[in-house]
Length: 614
Image (cartoon, rainbow, N blue to C red; front, side, top):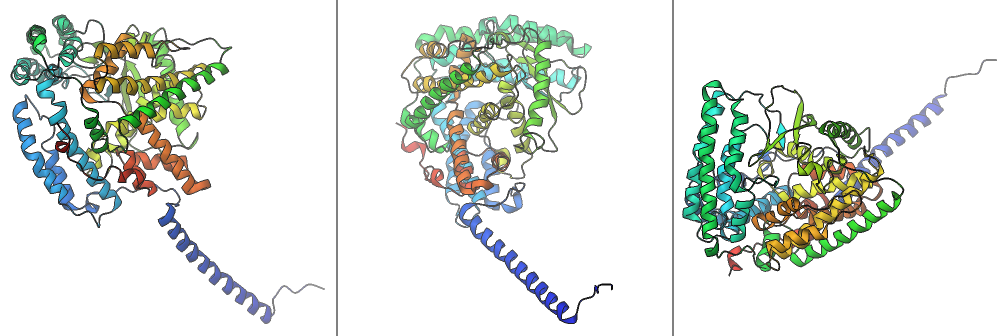
């Protein structure tokens, strides 16, 4: 007998009643879970990852945007040949007006994002005040005028470390005329230097004589060789000029070089009369850390962090060398062809390794190009120069030094030994990646804010992350030792640099100590005099590099968010939030992302520089 498949009315009723109860209870549970998760979000920021939404102009107080635009209009030196003394005078006169307007804003009802933006704008005003009354480059630093004259020319040249997607050769008639005019303007910059430099620092004059133009220090770059260097550059560049302008370039370049040479002779003749000091008081630099860098640390605390970094670097270096003790040391590439093969392989592997099909650490962005290196010319005083004739659509090009340059042969940083040692710092997800993210930010304040300490810290972090997560270096296990030597070098930037900046040691002592404290170790080559010059010269020109301090703040934020979210913590969420929210000091990102204001409270109270200057 066939079984009945239909249901009785009673069964249908009970089932329909149970279904209704199930649906109702499910809906109640759904809304209860939303309520609970919302409550937890308020208390612990415990929300699932989603793409970061950045407030645009319409979500910002209009009075803040107006003030930012007007204040930023007085920054920098403008185009052409600026009148530096007049600009400094104008900035001093107007700064206090903008600061009074900023202090008068009521931020009580603003979002955390906009309150962070307020503090960023305040730090920009404090940075300008520090430049005007402490660094005082226009009256203390002869290399300011030398480098301004040289960069006035180099802005029109095709080259630079980050070549990007350049306009192919030859130079257009308009660009050629701009280069010729910029060379002819050289004397106008140097004449201002002679008028304005009334408190010259002799150590800064030495930098102008030893290292004109900035870039990598190289023997033969000194100002006394400027005529030969300009002539060599002009002879090469003239080949890529329109025929109507080519013959003009060498004579104009030689004339510009003669002006620079005469300025150098003027510095040498007057060096004994220079009385400016290269160092600044510790109390003043503590103010700089708190109010310009927005770091909750003073000089003593950053010294302690650097000492810990130094100890960690040498310890972990020893652990790696112990593991690899039976393997031969590795050496830099012998040819550019060999290096570029390693570099191409690293670029492909590293980007894939960061993304979803690898370690799933970062999100890619539609506007990110592929990155490839190529050899450039290195011509002092302009540095990297290129004369590209071919276009490479979709490729962002980065120049590397020729195989015979000291940075290829002897640099302790290890880039030519295994590209991945610094690939994550320089390329992707370092300087190129972060720059692209920030240029595409909808936030009108952060899009135009610059924080070199955040930038350096983010990039430094991505030197060490591949080691921690077992990235497959193309040169094998011994390459894993090299990031720890870079870690040592960055710690010594602080330890030696802080003594130099506060006047405990001289520049010559700093150069010597920096080399002695970073000797050849393992596959590392030790610090050459060129690297010591580059590292320590920057300290008395622009302050310390605080990537060690920033790395500690990233570690601290990661640890605290891990405890907030426990097993829901996501490295991808963590990194994407930190990079997407812009070049913001980590004390403020900690507040905005984690809801923790402990570091922010230490730097939020405004203190004017004038109250501590003696």
